[in-house]
Length: 203
Image (cartoon, rainbow, N blue to C red):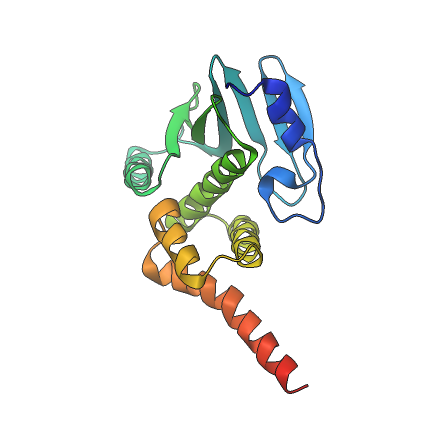
């Protein structure tokens, strides 16, 4: 059974501040012509939704405009994006508009779409930007906020009972991180948790 536009928007409008899931955070939802815009102060991007027949297209505008770049820099970015397109499941980078802005997009079929699948799509979308920012060495503040979001996503997976092996598999196979990048994130989350548990034992 196909999910309606209204139901998808109701999932995003729940505003559950106790949840770590992207789909539940307090989104400000605005409508512009034929698409919707999601905004939250903790997310350094606006997220766009466009409902098209039996598909909802969820995408991010990165602000990286390649049309004005020198040929060498533009080709370097194209190369990185092609590599990332092969690396990340479901999400694709593409160019849009006269300025050839880099966008990241995931298309979700409305047929049998669930709230968890929408959350998964949002996670993959934000994770793709994390990879792009790190690969292209974009500004530090930008990178810091994306990294924080990645850590929150992994923390939520830990709270939901996922094992270290489950999370590592997800980060490598779904998100496209390297083993070293996955280990670094897991050490930040699970390492600090192990320390807290140890200190609690002897407190």
